[in-house]
Amino acid sequence: MTQEDVIPRLKKLMTERLRLAPERTDSLDPNSLLLKDGLGLDSLDCIELLLGIEDEFDLEFSEEQDGWMDSFSSLATLSQLVLHAKGESE
Image (cartoon, rainbow, N blue to C red; front, side):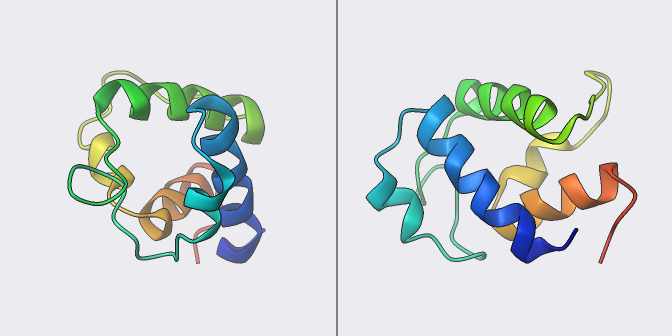
């Protein structure tokens, strides 16, 4: 699995779990900002998306894991979180 495999699935999760318009997620590039001044995701959106990621990629993240919100800064960093958790870091 590569970043190119993960990013489209993350975009689909954003449209399904966060109810974002497909036009908004389709136009995102890997370095598009997801939080605050970017796409505008907040902490609740990130938690919902994280739950979707766990389901989609058959992963489980620990609540005690520090710095997990940093992974939500862009699609690139979020895809790296998935790849790392699956043991397939690029």
